Amino acid sequence: MTATPATAAPAASAEASSSGAAVPAVSPWRGRCLGTRTVSYTERDAIFYALAVGARADDLDLVFEERLRVLPTFALTLAQWAPDALGALGAFDITTAVHGSQRLTVRRPLPRSGELSMTACVAEVWDKGGAAVFDVEVESDHFLATWSLFAPGSGGFGGERGPSGPRRPEGAADRRLSVATHPEQAAQYRLLGDRHHMHIDPEAARAAGMPRPFLHGLCTLAAVTLPAAGVLGAHPADLTELEARFSAPVFPGDRLAVDAWDEGPGGLRLEASAYGHPVLTGVRTRFAVAPGPENPSAALAPAEGDL
Image (cartoon, rainbow, N blue to C red; front, side, top):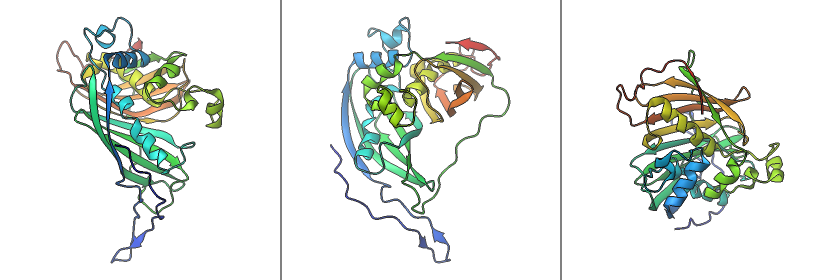
């Protein structure tokens, strides 16, 4: 079902409570339904996704249909229609809005191929003063995903500011990984659905304030989860929870330094940087692993990895 275009909504305003204190205003976009959509995909799509985010040819259970396990983050490409639909309704300026953060909760594994029905809504709108953050929530039987979209020029309506970002873990990281991206990665990843021109066209990238086309944040995030699973002795398809903030763009071909802190069986905190500047912050991953000799998630020794 396609969402019906919205008419211009009146500006929200704060009201006074019985005690005289101002009650935070609520954006007229909060709670807006974006519709329900059924999306189909094939084994080829799931395999292409795995290759686009960094799987290797010898990762047979990610790239060979006879053994295929679908990466849970593939669901985010199938649900990309929802944040795009909100922009098309005129909630914010699509030329300046950016993807601020992402959350994903996995409810059940994705099948190798088939159809997924999803329902989307605007779960919350936070007022950052000169900007607003729109939380777009997409729900299906297989996952719950939330896009947080930072939209300059859409704030100042008197609403709540919302939660602040997580702090970097204290102390030295338990492990540091090196994760490579490749020059063709953005060109490949965009074929999975997010075809915004700034990821392929130099002129569009410069118009967005970037020196050249840059990698999709969700591609960068998925690329980091692959070695994170390896650190835990887990399979990347066993991801159950993921969240992250996109702090700065990554350019195709950049090499990322990833610090990892153990958070108990199956869990890691991660921070990724490029050329000394943070690009992914507040990353939390959790995988379904059984602690023990074969999955020593509670015993991360300081080490250097190169993936």
